Image (cartoon, rainbow, N blue to C red; front, side):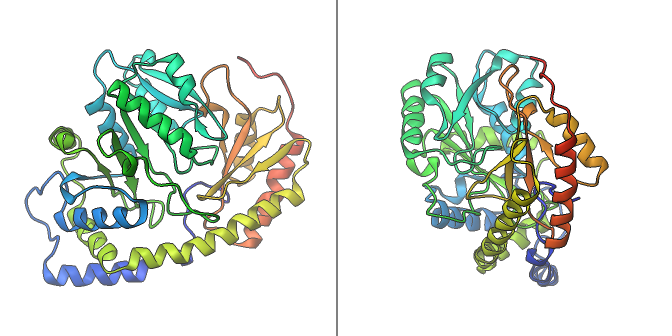
Length: 370
């Protein structure tokens, strides 16, 4: 449905190239069904990823530090298992991706998660130190904070890493949407600034195909055995054939070309969405917070509008949006919506924006329960 998150534009997905590489590799027998393979991942893919992140994100690593995962969620799961002990707590952004908050909540220890506020510069490190100076880890999205969309400032990056070094803590860097920056130059990765204290997470699902369940974690050398051991206990290893196809896709330059192409396409889609919403939504009830990166924007709603109710009614109208309020810690929520702009042409986007505007205009304002 229109405005669904992480839906790539059909014309941008490199289906033909992917199919051709797969056929070529199958003819050579690469990645053919066999016994269990290395849980760390296929070496050609780890080498291709190490080279790619060195060039694109200033990550400092070797292929030996790369562990292939089935996506970012598995990377977060691995990091939480390896880095956090029974009595440890972790900083988590407020608001944050539900994948990490739900994961830590599932441990049964709500005190394991310390919600640290986010402002225009990213996670408030001073607030984190006041709340839990001895936290064992910090889970952050510094390139494109989810859901709000801003990058973490250089000053905050340095402060976060200084805290991690002082307290021997870990920073788990989910480099979410770093490839899709439309204005200016990206900040360097946290891992590139301090490879010894950062666990770096990446994925190919959003930039290529959501059904491609391949991601990676890059960890300091001394953590590799622990991450590989935890990986075996989950699903042992990612699909072998897909790993070899992706390795060739990266090594032969197709990924770089694909990213250059989709940046322009998504930049146009982003501008179209912002203009379309601005022309239809009542400004006293909803306004867009545009980011300069990624595949979504945040639509803030006037205080008192129930964003969960808007989501339900929008779905009935054939529009898929996500509520922002559940991503906040209890008692701190703001009403808003997350809207994706991939995969929808102008006609569908305009029609969906009109339906959403009607839902927002008719939404009842009432005090939100604490």
